[in-house]
Amino acid sequence: MNIDRTEFHAWMERVMQRFDLLAEKIHKVEQRHNSIDGEELLDNQDVLQMLKISSRSLQRYRSDGKLPYYTISGKLYYKLSDVHQFIRESFHRPEPQRKATG
Image 1: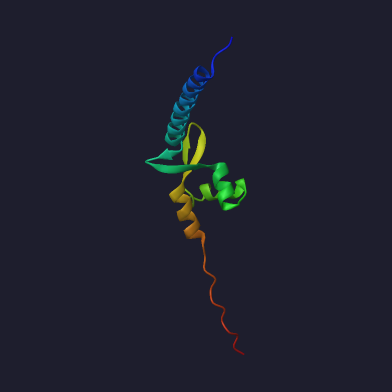
Image 2: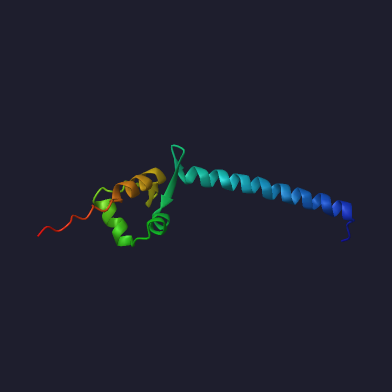
């Protein structure tokens, strides 16, 4: 089979348009599955990396009610805003040291 250059470019253009359409559809599906009420959802791995903690620590934060989570199709997710709030609440300013009297 032998095609000329113009026909080849037209064919490649159609292929690339199909790829672009597929990429848009994939992006829409990902957004739908990774957000709730328009807010980004993070999975366990995302939160573990973000907070630099162990999976046991994350489980303890869930159990203690310190970090809200959602179960979707058997998988755990966290709202990005909840994780940010958890970080703010977990941040403790060091207390000023008192001078020893003696």
